[in-house]
Figure 1 (cartoon, helix red, strand yellow):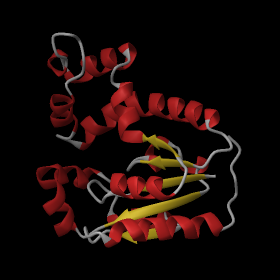
Figure 2 (figure 1 turned 180 degrees about the horizontal axis):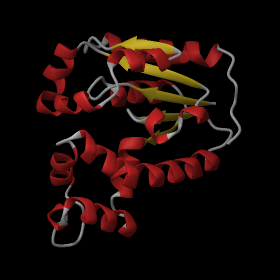
Figure 3 (figure 1 turned 135 degrees about the vertical axis):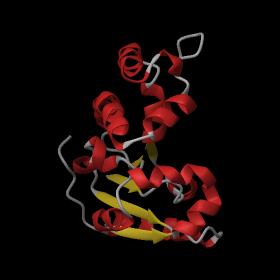
Figure 4 (figure 1 turned 180 degrees about the vertical axis):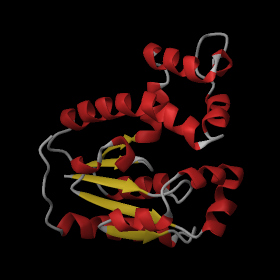
Length: 192
């Protein structure tokens, strides 16, 4: 069974995964980490330099994520350029990993499950949600990314279960309970 965990920036997706992994035996495909790994690929780096300039690389030729992030999140067109480079590679690598973990209980976690094209691989989707004010308190200036993401309502529409994060210790128990509930629901087991 493959369960996607998604939601806007700063809602607590990583906290949800940690809570679930502490109570259940699961494999985890973290799209943020995969995105970081993809930036190490030479073909991806070359394309990013062509779009965003050589100042996104350090002296060893590695992508400086902070500089790239400032450039990418400067406009919608910059985000689209970056996504055209990075998302196909992420999707390809994700599908390879999903196939390698076939038959296991797998969590795919990331804000971009749908944008990368991985939603059809998920039997169920958990959406993590939180109030804007609480997100801003938790992540500060990084909240600016939210303006370039799908709306709160768009995320809520794609979930089989939605978990509200009040940023208290109750959230972890709520994640474990929701996950247990999802395990008991019938799934469509997509062909991978």
